[in-house]
Image (cartoon, rainbow, N blue to C red; front, side, top):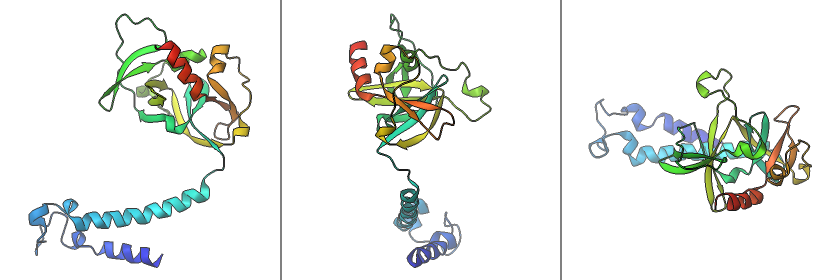
Length: 225
């Protein structure tokens, strides 16, 4: 802790604080002739790395003390009125809504079209239809409760696609033994894509349905090839 205090004290008296970020004051820092701005200077970069490392270590300690126990994890999202969970490392990108372009002569109900995320084109699937659900008709422009639709870019083995969710929650940790049989009246096809149902403290009086990655990969093989 003493070392961290000394580091912060040194940073508070650093050259860019006394000379000025742009170096307009006199005497002017001689390094600015080559680097133009403090952010391009190795002294500035090294100080930033030192500060970041200090906060990172402190954050890791806090997280390790507060991290819930469990041998499973799920990123929670809502489609319609139902909550689902997906393995966090399956999700590649969480993106705001963007325009979905329909495909000509495409009659498969589960394919919405194509969408661009981070400059790359991906297929957009209507995942909610696999469970007999419908997404909310409300768009983000009419939102008044800070609940926003999102697009998730996910990886299932060799398959990468985008699907829409009405709400994104957080990562929830739980034990494998917490996964129970599904109580909702999903059809057989929908049930086959789920590992089970999990009661969740983050969702008062509700539970979520845990997606089965292997089953979804198999469905994609059959449906999209």
